[in-house]
Length: 131
Image (cartoon, rainbow, N blue to C red; front, side, top):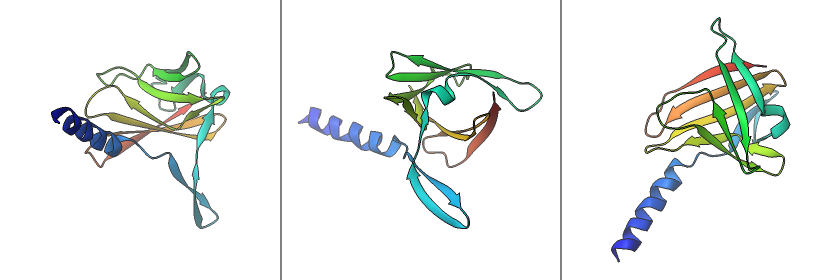
């Protein structure tokens, strides 16, 4: 019985922590919701911040099932993204508790916006990267 209680508790918090892959996109004053993924070929490789520091990050494909960001240090591992066929989910998580969340938005082929947030914290911050 204790095992079932622990399992329910864990599943409850995982459901809260899992980010939605639905993203609202502006459409001429109307807002539509669509599920977004990014093609692996569009994201893999090196990206640099647009500020004067030009900090480099790299998206690295691992075993065609998982992709991670190399170069972002938040204290506990890398941000991981699931790979499905030829695309990745826009939402990634770091391996810790409470989890760090990382959401990708490919602005165009040369610019990428990454939004970072933490579980239980409303504020997030965004960083723009370029090829």
